[in-house]
Length: 71
Image (cartoon, rainbow, N blue to C red; front, top):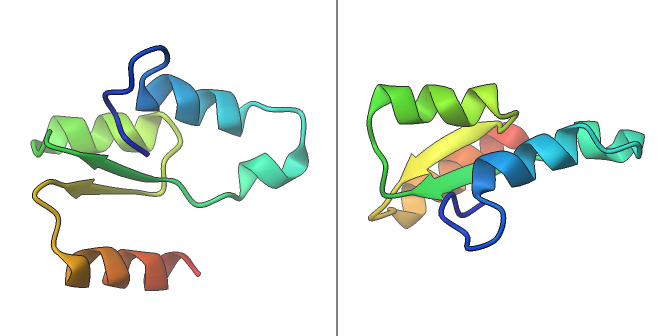
Protein backbone atom coordinates (compact mmCIF):
# COMPACT_ATOMS: atom_id res chain seq x y z
CA UNK A 1 0.00 0.00 0.00
CA UNK A 2 1.51 3.31 -1.05
CA UNK A 3 1.14 5.75 1.84
CA UNK A 4 1.12 8.90 -0.28
CA UNK A 5 -1.70 8.35 -2.75
CA UNK A 6 -3.50 11.41 -4.13
CA UNK A 7 -7.17 11.10 -3.12
CA UNK A 8 -7.07 8.75 -0.14
CA UNK A 9 -3.72 8.15 1.55
CA UNK A 10 -2.60 4.65 2.47
CA UNK A 11 -3.58 5.00 6.11
CA UNK A 12 -7.12 6.01 5.17
CA UNK A 13 -7.32 3.23 2.59
CA UNK A 14 -6.16 0.61 5.10
CA UNK A 15 -8.72 1.80 7.64
CA UNK A 16 -11.45 1.67 4.97
CA UNK A 17 -10.46 -1.89 4.06
CA UNK A 18 -10.38 -3.02 7.69
CA UNK A 19 -13.77 -1.50 8.51
CA UNK A 20 -15.51 -2.73 5.35
CA UNK A 21 -18.59 -4.92 5.84
CA UNK A 22 -17.10 -7.86 3.95
CA UNK A 23 -15.43 -10.13 6.56
CA UNK A 24 -12.67 -11.04 4.07
CA UNK A 25 -11.34 -7.49 4.40
CA UNK A 26 -10.32 -8.15 7.99
CA UNK A 27 -7.67 -10.66 6.87
CA UNK A 28 -6.26 -9.18 3.67
CA UNK A 29 -2.52 -8.65 4.18
CA UNK A 30 -1.59 -4.98 3.79
CA UNK A 31 2.05 -3.91 3.61
CA UNK A 32 2.90 -0.21 3.83
CA UNK A 33 5.53 0.89 1.32
CA UNK A 34 6.84 4.36 1.93
CA UNK A 35 9.93 6.53 2.18
CA UNK A 36 8.89 7.29 5.77
CA UNK A 37 11.24 5.17 7.83
CA UNK A 38 10.96 6.35 11.44
CA UNK A 39 9.50 4.14 14.18
CA UNK A 40 6.55 6.55 14.46
CA UNK A 41 5.80 5.93 10.78
CA UNK A 42 5.89 2.20 11.35
CA UNK A 43 3.53 2.54 14.32
CA UNK A 44 1.17 4.71 12.29
CA UNK A 45 0.95 1.95 9.68
CA UNK A 46 0.18 -0.64 12.34
CA UNK A 47 -2.41 1.66 13.95
CA UNK A 48 -4.12 2.00 10.56
CA UNK A 49 -4.51 -1.78 10.38
CA UNK A 50 -1.60 -2.69 8.15
CA UNK A 51 0.33 -5.88 8.77
CA UNK A 52 3.82 -4.64 7.95
CA UNK A 53 5.81 -1.55 7.00
CA UNK A 54 8.62 -1.51 4.43
CA UNK A 55 10.69 1.61 3.84
CA UNK A 56 11.96 2.73 0.44
CA UNK A 57 14.31 2.18 -1.16
CA UNK A 58 12.95 -1.31 -0.81
CA UNK A 59 15.10 -4.39 -1.02
CA UNK A 60 13.48 -7.33 -2.78
CA UNK A 61 14.75 -9.75 -0.13
CA UNK A 62 13.03 -7.72 2.59
CA UNK A 63 9.75 -7.69 0.66
CA UNK A 64 9.98 -11.43 0.07
CA UNK A 65 10.64 -12.09 3.77
CA UNK A 66 7.69 -9.94 4.84
CA UNK A 67 5.34 -11.59 2.35
CA UNK A 68 6.42 -15.05 3.52
CA UNK A 69 5.64 -14.13 7.13
CA UNK A 70 2.14 -12.99 6.17
CA UNK A 71 1.17 -16.17 4.31
